[in-house]
Each structure stands twice: as C-alpha cells, then as structure tokens.
Amino acid sequence: MLNKIQKEQIKKALLQLDFSGKEADVYCSALLRSDSTVLTIANDTELSRGTVYDIIEKLKFKGYLAEIKKGKKRGITVESPTNKFYALLDAQHEQLQKTKKIVDDILPMIKSVNASEDFKPQIRVYSGDKGFRQVWDEIFAYSGKSWLSIARMETFVKFSGEDYLEEILKKKTKLGFISRAINENSPWARKMQSRDRKDNRNTRLMPKEFVFPSTEIIFGDKIAMFSTAKENTILVIESQDFAQTHRVYFEMLWKFLERGGFSHEK
Image (cartoon, rainbow, N blue to C red; front, side, top):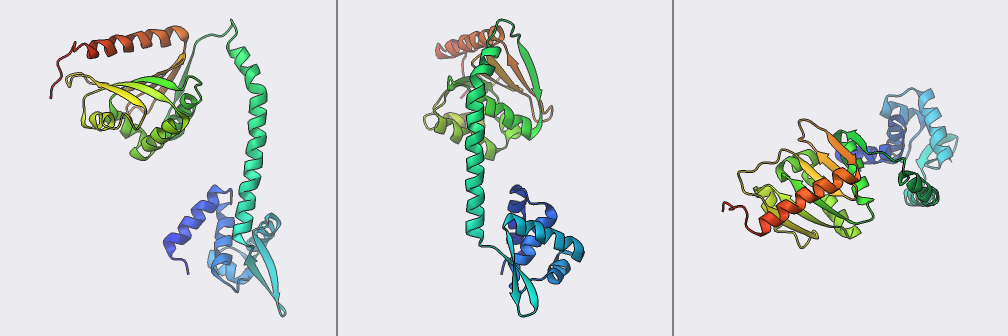
C-alpha cells in the first residue's frame, strides 16, 4: 500500500508524462485497488461517473488501463506498468532520433544564413528558471567547448540554486568543456577553486575589495550576462566585436593577477 507521499510522487511523475490531472487521479485510484470500478474510482477521485468513464476509455486506448470481467461485474485494472512505460520510453527515443535527424539536416543551412554578411549583432533577454536553462543549453551547444567567466559565485548560486549549479558542472565535464574563471574572492569562490581539477577549470581570485554584482560568461562570439536574482535578467549579446573586446578585458585581468598586480587579502 502506498503512503500519501508516494502517491503524490507517482502523480507528479504521471503529470510529467503528459497525463492530465484527472487522468493521473483515475490511474492512481485504479492502481491502488484490485477491485476498481467506475463507481469506486468516482468515489476516490470525487469526479462524476461520466467523467471517470470518459477518462477510463482514453487511458484504455492509450494502453494504461484495461477492463476485466468478474462474473457479471466489470472491473478496471492497470496494464503491466513495466511494459507500458518502457514502451513509452522507446517511442519517445524514436521520436527524439527523428527530431535529431531533422535538426541535423537543417542546421547547416541555418548556420550558413547566420554566417552571412547580412548578419547583425543581436541582444536577447531572458528571465527566470526557464530562461536560465535556455542560456546554458546555448552555452553547451558551443562547438569550441570552452568559456571564460568573471563571476561573484554567491550571486550566481542564488540565481541558479545549488542543485542546478551541480547539474551544470556535471554536464560540463561530461561534454568535455574547459574554462578559466576570474571570481570575486569569497567563500563560495574558494570552494569552487578547490575543485578546479575536477571541473576542468582554472580559477584566479580578485582581491576582496573588488565586488562583482553579476556574472559574465564569454563563449565563441557571444557573451552571457547573468544579473542578480533580484533583477532576474540574463542578456545574451551575439557580436564578434563585443565578444573579442570582453575577451581582451578578461586576458588583461588574468595576466595582471598572474603577475601579482593586486595584493590579495588572506
């Protein structure tokens, strides 16, 4: 028997698999009882019998539920979850492969347009968790597999969250990206510097009197600028000139720190 938390976890997962809220409720009700009927499911879910009947028919058609007969009674049972959900994964994988082929076919043409003489610099604005992830998807799509960053780690972690930061770092090493970082001298920055080897990174720290409110990442011909969580804004500037200028700024700071141009506080 599932407890309330487990039931909620299953329902949440079903919603992510494109079940509607009512479909998830009906499925969970049928899952938890061996003698489910339209009436028992209606009582469990507080839906009308007509609504439950329609949902059952939809889930039967999709292969998630089946109808069984016990004497004169008709019951509802779940289909083998292992077979059904793995079949769903296979179908999604097949669709993903088709989508990848479409992208592979059109990407060279899109890139050729992007690289034309008519191309003009672009500035795109993003916000929120979705925007944050979109920008990182763009960074990880960069074929050069490297970036330069100037950051205040506390601000960045507050924007991204520790879990997603860890997700970024794992993806970085998995894809073989390398980076150099100039960070504000802070507890988070020192923590990150201590794992440079693990994260394919080389970090240098600014003196403590220098504070960066935001974070900047330079990759290819683009610059991604992450504001504080309060401002909740991410700018992506796509420009060879701007990217090269910011790359020069970075290299100037990098060499200055290497030569001991600043006296670090301990």
